[in-house]
Length: 60
Image (cartoon, rainbow, N blue to C red):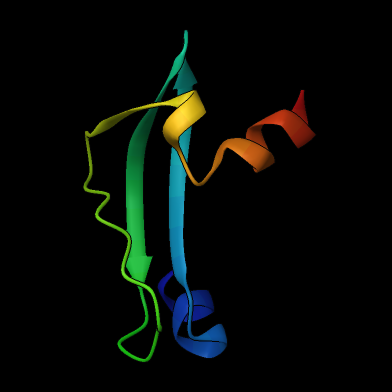
């Protein structure tokens, strides 16, 4: 994930769904990334409020 984030200059986050929440498992960010998401390991984010929501729906 770190290599991907550096190569593409993005913020990469791995999260698992738990009922109506997403639990952040790991985050990596390129120092050149224009956006810094305030997501930390262990943080719970409501699916409706998460920037990852679109990807969750694609996998259902």
